[in-house]
Image (cartoon, rainbow, N blue to C red):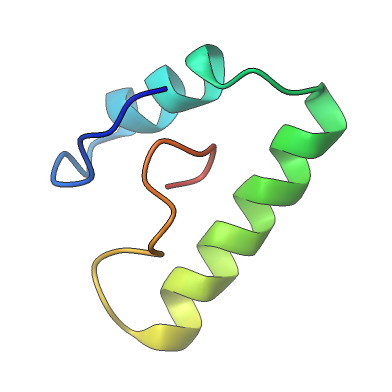
Length: 54
């Protein structure tokens, strides 16, 4: 898993997506959760670095 949460680029999103060891459905669920957390907390990180969607 990638641990660099300071890199907020589209390429880091896809790198996390590809490298995270989970099923497609789990990756979608984590991506949605992390994106919603990011938007609702109005901050730069969802506190789940390395997960899909972070």
